[in-house]
Length: 299
Length: 299
Image (cartoon, rainbow over all chains, first blue to last red; front, side, top):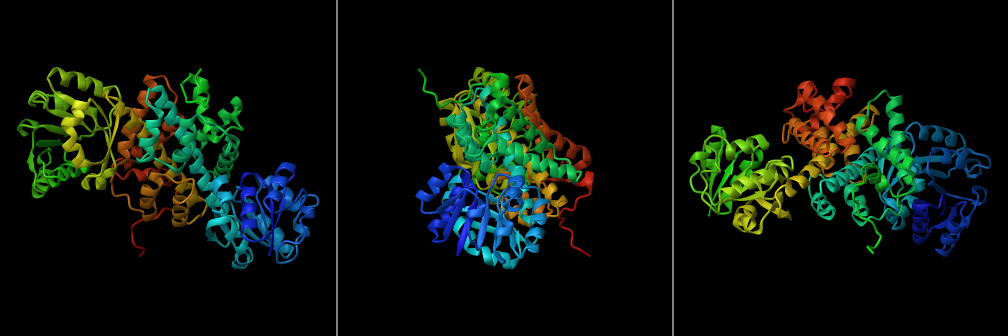
């Protein structure tokens, strides 16, 4: 079983190393020499172009968006025409639900299989081989991809057999994740303005009806004043953009998603696009001068 | 130790019965004869006016809002002037943070103690004696109220010693709770419009980064199509109203809270105010005709 991972970023590196640990012969592909060196040190084979990946039984494309997925598969010297018949392609990026069916049709015409397989869970879970995957594809594709999926995921939800169904559920998840981060920011900002102790707010609400996965996870970064990027503000500019594009194409109003997207856009406009997504709280700080914790030591 | 509960509604009835079970001599007060009969059947003493409650060491006022709290304590034949010196009053309603300090000052002038003690957790937790309380007051007030608090709460967060600090944290919790319910509704509505299976969406997202306490708890009602009121749409019209009033009084922008409030207002305007708060999803159904589960059996 020889598998490939295209994109050795925060998620892809974890997925690739999880494959190595699972005993799969694994080829990783990334433009970054640093990423390739890291992966080789972890026991993998690293290349800088998909044309150099060689024979693959299964390949996971874990890049940022549909444009990059398209370039990897169908661009000049793309991967699709290099793969042997019967190989399975898994696409892990968050994309519009309309995109995966177009990939499936073109791969099928080449004798390849496809799983619409958006991933969730963050870099730490990727490194532990315990991502969540919201997957859709044929039974044959799942069979061919089983060893790869087992290596990288703790939980594989088989949403259905039609590519696009995975992307739809992932989009709904991102709607909620994005709104919850923006709501958490709004809540901590108001708490600061009202003179509440933010650590107390964090502890109490983490255990109350106002809690969320994002409040628990990203709230810690606000309490610590640490905005080291794990997932960036610009990821939610993109993902809530996908949500709103879908709403527009279906003529469907999404008022909370729209308000949250504006907050992430405001953060990105303020130069915070590459900070951790929790830095959306700094929109309030820039506007109103509220006190927020920082990692800087007092003098 | 003789304790009183004013308001035998969804939360107050549970609190009052928890006091009885804890072995406290308990007097409940409510205008509803049905509520009084239910409480007497559970072993309590029930009266219809606060003037009939007799001597109390501690009393919890668990009514809907500040207006009702004010009437109970300081209205004609109010409770404050009937209580013996040294008694402690706990106010459990969600109110603006400005309100509890005004109560504390007037009770103190009468020789009474006060705990700003907004409750959380819902009717089931109230009945089990395991509410969460976000409490603020003096050490002496907590000492006097300890037996009552132990009887009704699983977790008492001592937010601080200044009344109003509890109300502030509760307000922040309600900001998040309200936004999360409205976001959940938006997510399920888009999922329905996109043709996703709502039970799958519920299961996957409950275990993913898009999850929240409210998604988990209230999402079930959407999947089941059961809008039997546990907490009503109009509660969030009120509570997000308190949040937005606070933002306005502090000149602080709250875009997500405002968008969520509009959704609850839209639901209430559509005649859904007394349905379960998850019925905010029906705003989308009224507008767009999306399919949502119902409890009606197919013919």
